[in-house]
Length: 87
Image (cartoon, rainbow, N blue to C red; front, side):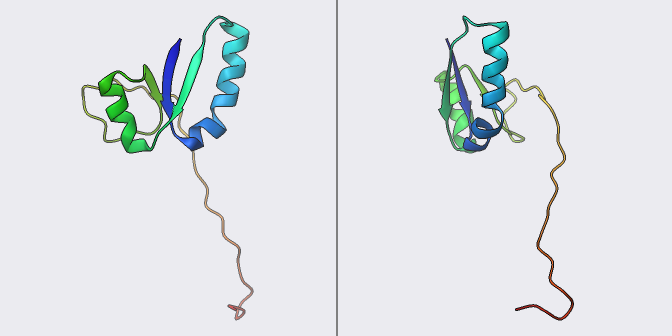
């Protein structure tokens, strides 16, 4: 069993595909997903309360090994108003 720390966003967006992939390639693996605030993840890793984390940790201490899983581009959208209509 692997204990994984992650955020709510990662749980909602990445974990479903991760679980489906693991079921097909490694059906005997068991994961326990635990949700934490991003700043709590480092503490959980250092205490040994979790085995790994899937999150964004740009300020992680050097004692924590990190690997990039992927990179993505985030787009920002807003609802525009017609010229002069700012109600």
